[in-house]
Length: 574
Image (cartoon, rainbow, N blue to C red; front, side, top):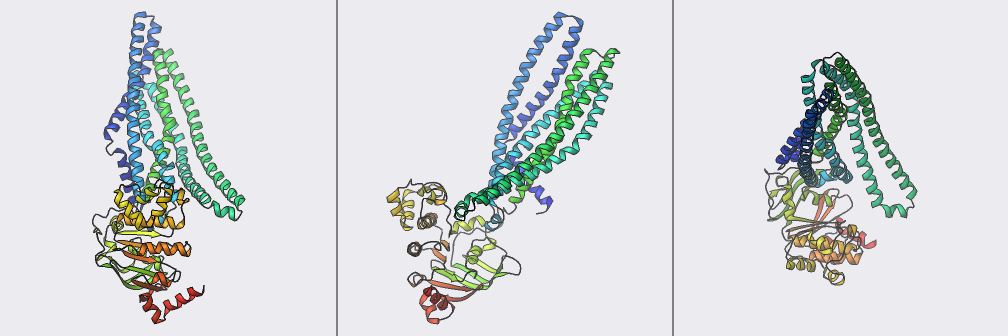
């Protein structure tokens, strides 16, 4: 993705902040504006109180005290409104942004999704979103408030003394020139912290996910050393970011102190000369806070804002594969079946996985796809699911070229059962329904068809499956996947080595459950070559080195005594 496209997509994410949220934004900006101007009014009151105290007029002093009380109440009221509208805006903005980011990530194609580590996505939805909220959204209000205070202060300063104001502006500009370069370091460090966070989370996920393997190899010390190393590097990067911020703070403090003392000394000189009143000097000292604070904070605020924009652009890259596909057709039925015509495919240039594959799977029938490791069996299913559109030839479902149909509509027609079935840490029924609402009768039919009735009777519908299905057997997890497919009523069921990790008896019962389903087009990739099971398929597709070498029923293939016969006889001897 080129930089201009990335920035264009990032603007879409920024627009999400204001979607159905403009009223809160406008009211928050209005409150910030009023608050900033009102706070500068404190300098005016201090000037008047100082000059009145010098004059000894008690009547005017009493009136100013009353005015100050009313002024304070107004400021508190505006501040409360500011907090109300600002918080409402931030809540909706962050919620909308995070939802859009999640939709972008989950809307990616399976192949594109798999190119990124899921820890990068987790970091983008957590750490990066928090940074965007703090360093972009909240910072925008802070920048606006500081800028308004600075402008209002400069206006009042010019009203009181143009010569002293020129001194303020000159010294303030010098402070900006000194501080600004340091702020860029913060943006660089913020980006590095984000990268380290993603890297650290990826490592933690791997270590916890592979804890069983680590213990079995007694590699706890090595795993701990890896954790300590990555943790140390993360904290070291965060420390560099803090140091960069500290340097900006120190430079800003020294500069602001110098500016404030310079303005005070020149103001005192003008007061002694009788050109301004002591109240004006006090007002200038007060207003210097509204000049110096922005100058001190602008470099780091702008640098952090730039870093946050970088994170938004990074999110744009994560979502680059997302396309609504309005111009594409919707896949609605399997029609007369699934057809491959002269299909060639390679995951990487120069390494063909499929070579001139032509085959037809008739609707409503069951097919076993067999062959040696790396022969292209699973790749066939991946192409049907639209995971890899860069193939040569034609893949059609129901007469529609799979590259010309909307990606989201493919899964309206096709269900997939893979070797590793993902089970949520919830009840059996919720895992079957995938948190959607279905009629009780539909659920019961799916449970029965998948052979889960025994599990439900024994353990109940509310039985907790555990994280990753840890409380279920391999066969039970596969049956839940079958029940999901039955409940969705998709006309095509793809099964990719679903029984490879199961014992022979469980594998046979799971395959029986699949073959007992009527009216579905079933494509089953399997390495199990057993006569009892394979004889039940309507057809067997035999693959070798990316080509379809044979097709037919079990009996027909055995009678030919070719490649399938060899595979089968070798499996019998093992």
